[in-house]
Image 1 (cartoon, one colour):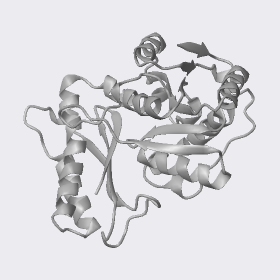
Image 2: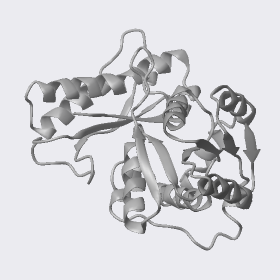
Image 3: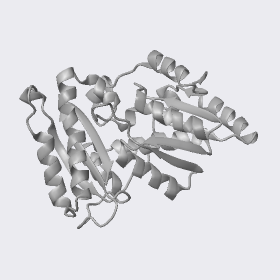
Length: 286
């Protein structure tokens, strides 16, 4: 596995692969890698000649300095993880390499960034699309693999590629869950065993909402109420202080992220809650 930290070097490397007819797969990450990332890598390896994984903690997408400071940084473990996954190339740039100081250019997102996660985290998606656009520019024409767990991020990045005409094919990859149903996330590392049990309320609420829609319920409000009630339901053996604190439980159109008046086609169910002070998100299609 090769490791590159300079943008120009990565550009040259990718250009040489494309010149020989190779297809490049890009997996953007912020490190603290887990089996969810492994799924992205496996899909990319099946479809591409060269798999590039970027490991970069992007300060621009954190609206809370404490969140940035607490974000797990596990580079040595991540590199070992990537070697075991058979990754061809890892891009580990410095902050100055990606965002030269002073930062004078910053992308903004209209409307889509004001909903859901954007309402709770002002400026978050502007930071996301700024770094993703830079990674796309550095890597060049490629397939880029994003997990469906960050569904709003996936929708926004897909729209950015469409509007700005990046030569990028976005490949969504389904959420990876543990045997109990918990969506894998780097943030799970910050939860103790009891809080991990409490966090299962997110996936339970989604499964309940999906099953209700499959049974014929077409009122988004009824589904949202059902999910909200399940999310905050008391759990035996879990202290009340560790129970999930609801942020939102919503039914949205998967493209516009707007709540439909009635469920008459595919929708996405999304939930967000804090468990032990750690903000978690999850979603499912229905």
